[in-house]
Length: 564
Ligand code: ASP
Image (tube, rainbow, N blue to C red; front, side):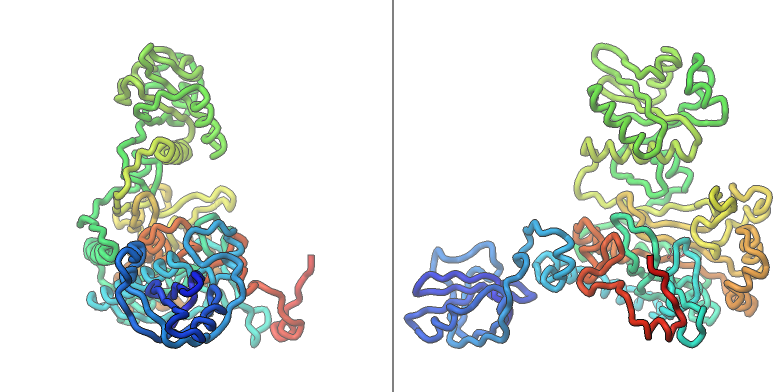
């Protein structure tokens, strides 16, 4: 039983490729054996659902199909039932289609019939099962937490659900089960996990979805290395599904190292090009823009693009790339066969400085040094982006590398200049590093967090932290984040109270399951690993949600809609 994938009418013989979840099998209808059956088979069309009954036989010599797993056999039909007919599909059910994604999403059920999609969801199932099995063997309990809940701050906008019984009150869909999993630790559950949907109403970049799935984990009395070992074991099992060996233990890198060497808190370590600091060299340079920046608290950093010998046009393109990111510009030094050629900004700094830069950078003939100057964080970010762009252009990344690592010691806070206050980098329940507690109010910018991210090939695949388990520390953090006592009580009163009833030290992590599956299946979009995803405008093209509701429904909810 299955779908007619393809049919070929060769006069006396009709061949049907029957497709089901496992693949394709050829069925033959022979007019000589049974003229009536052969006549019936003539009515078959693509995507009809049929049942056939017959004899499996080895195909004649020379007629085998090496591209099919079942290519050495065929079924000679004795009986045929058409279980359901099908209209002509808007696109063919095969992997190589050029159909627009919108059409694929509108007819998602047809899109999901394609072999590549079926394989993707088989992998997703295997990954999910591997996680569940592994977590069970590690003593974790899967516990469900509510979807209709109270807002938890993960830094995004909430999806809200109006209450019918209390007009003007709203549930928030969880951005993550953060507070519930911490409360389960207070409940004495010790080890929790859940494969769970999270909802964030963000403007969607190419690789985001408004609802996505996390492997959410929390444990009591955690030691960081135990938690890491446990997650590493899980990653090893999940990647083993694809025959990929992840060498353990995973390397660890501090946030500082990641930013300074890679210009990113999710460093792609698959290629050895590193950012370097040249600021001190410019303090003694001839009077120039870079010297001004170096002298007024800014930084000058750069990287070497080996064996690039860029033309003027290519250098202009690179400058345009940096501008489009928002950077002021990029200076370069080309080390050619015929000598050194530098951008005007570099020339002003004087040839001694240019020489000193080349020497420190380790660049040699054929290489290009790129330099940027400005505030430290922004400069590192721009160089980090440039580093990745050059890697893409120059194919610096060898295929088949799986560089997974932990990034540690993130800053606890970052300053939000729009809101003019400190905000949590991770979330407000992340514990500061113990030694840094004393500088919490005097130097908030220097306080490190007990937070960690799991990074694979330059993509963050998970993040978590050891939590605050003391009420006084939690209150101090809320205060630092600018919540008044009243606001803190209003938003998290239940949680603050819970902290007062014997809260064990605890910590956890959440891993992005969609992204993991995307990496495992080599799909290039999150939408291809979610059965029913939404578009960049957060629309489900198949079911047509979101959609207006009836006036009666709005009245029940006490809601009046302003029409634009
Ligand atoms: N709740 C966090 C997140 O969704 C993860 C964690 O801290 O466990 O990113």
